[in-house]
Structures are given as structure tokens and as C-alpha cells.
Image (cartoon, rainbow, N blue to C red):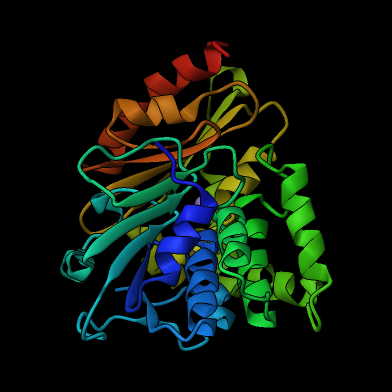
Length: 326
Ligand SMILES: [Mn+2]
């Protein structure tokens, strides 16, 4: 059961000492939503932090406004721990101790798949929202806080990144309406923010992308495309995994492709990022392997080699692109 925006704002107004948890491998929506909420709570005079345990991706460094910390003991008294853009403990690994410090637990998210291992004092999960940033925008308004330039930049980042710059099918009139309001905030400039997010890729990252694209495999008459970013490739190109962002969008831009799968190898596991174009329910395919996400954007994790992961998931994805069940 979803709590209302108003009741969540009322709960938050009464609390102080709030830790906000974006998901691991934070993206623009996770960090943008967390930052916007943190800044709004601070506007109300509250002590709030965004709890992270990994570096902020380079293309999101402009969101750093003193909100993030990796210090578990940053607050003496934590009255609320709240997850944003995720809803399960598996999405905040390494931050369990900090999470448990919150006397109340909350969740604000837009992912369709819900974790069963966790109980919240309040939660709001809106799968129809293009970004968690849209929900946060409404909470900020319900808190009675004016949208500052920093909050506007954070919410815009959340929405532009999760909608693929307003191109994905999750984009709604509301996404544009919220963006429309942000444009009216003094000093807001979408061009500047977009350039910071999208136009700062390194030469190495572009070269790595070329290597991945050279090596793509196609299945099911070109309806499915799969690629991989291995540890060896990262090393050869002098890149980190966050520099692989955007490759899957390139794969999806190929004519005739209905679904894409990008394997990302790390020391401990292989993450498969999945995208669907129109009818391929990739959340369902991800769920077969214990993953989840949105109907057209999902992911799952394998604890084996890339080749073994390929063997497991490619047949499922071929089935997915060959089935129109929605
Ligand atoms: Mn999101």
C-alpha cells in the first residue's frame, strides 16, 4: 500500500536526523533524487545526509553540494532512514549498519519489482513515474519548500537521465510539466546541466565504446543485441565501469533491435543490463535470474563468468523478443 505524498511530507516534517540512501552504482535519478530531498530537508533546518559508499560518478559531480557522506556515524540520532530509487537491502550493500540506525524506515521509488525482505514505516512506489525525481519533486512541494537552483538541478538531472533525455517511452506529460516548472527557476539552464551530464566523456571511454560495438552479437533476426564490458577491456582502455554508461542506448538505437543486453563484469559478479523497445518485457526476463526493474529497463546479476551468464540469459531473451505478450 502506498502512503500519500502528503502523509510522507507530514512524517518528515516531524523528524530530524535523516539519512537518505540512493542505490549502488548510483545514477542521475538515484543521486539527483537523494540530493534534492536532502537539500529540501536542510531548508527546513533539519540535519540530513545522503549516505553513500562509492565515489560519485564524474558526470554527476556538480550535484555535490555537501550532502553526501560515507560516515556511518555522521549523525548522533537518526530518526529516519529512507531509500530512494530502490527498495531492497540488496540495492544498498555495505550500508546496512547506517540503514539500521534509522528508528523509522521509509522508501520512495518507482521500480516495479518490490523487495520482500524488508518492512517500511512508510513507502511510496510509483512504477508509472518516469523517475523517482518526479515523486521527490512532489514531496519537496508538499514539504512547503521553495525549489532552489540546486534542487532544480538535482531534480532535472533525475528526470533527464531516467527518461533518456525525455526520449524513452516512460516520459509523460508530467515529466515535461515538472521540467517546465524547473525552467522558471531563477538561473536554471538545462543546456548547462545536460552538457555536464552528457558531454564530458573521456577519449578512452569513446574508444572503449567502439570496442564494445565492434564486438556486438545479434540474435533472433537482429531483434536482440548483446555486448559486454569485461574487466580486461576496462584495463586495456584505461576506463572505469561508470564510463560504459550510454553504450546500451547506442545498442538500442540500432534499427530493428527490440531488446539489448549489456554484460558488465566486475571482480565479484556479472551484471546484465537489459533494455526493451516496445513489447519486450525485460523485467520479466531479469526476474528469471532474481533481478528486476522496469518493463523496458531492468537488470540482473550473475555469479559466474560472462560466457556462462550469456549461456543462461540469451535463450530467455530470444524467447522474450519472439513473444508479444503485452
Ligand atoms: Mn530511477
